[in-house]
Length: 207
Image (cartoon, rainbow, N blue to C red; front, top):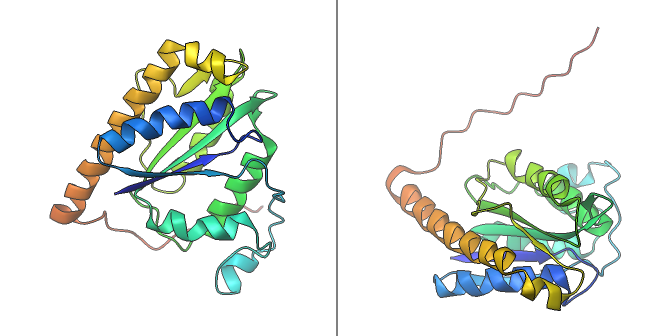
């Protein structure tokens, strides 16, 4: 089983990476293969709602890191997005990446892939950032893995994050909970299969 971890921070080995690294180590101990991808330093345009990804055989019209990650998302059993807090919201690159990745991969069935958001902050804006990131999972049939506290660490440097003992413990607990959920879902798929899906209904309200 595999978990794909996305570092949405511009800093490759900063606070967000420190949290994801702690999480990754726990997942590996639980027998889950992990990959940490750094996308926060890439030039990632926002979605322009051209819908070419839905009509041109798949893939985003902007052929960048998003299209490279899409097949990895398809193969993964779990997906983690990590981001620092920028003005009480995720970093802009992380938002652009998530908007385009999830919109352009609507043809990839994400049902019962485990999702988790990890947030790093100096002081505040953490819960609002956490809420924004979880929205991508709850619209995609992806169960969210939780921990003993909201999935966040505090610090303005990796050294300060390493001193946030509760935050690191939160990452380890998240890892164990993710692994349990992933393994349980795998057993459920084998015994029960995935839930039945109805054809999508899209309702627009016009006067």
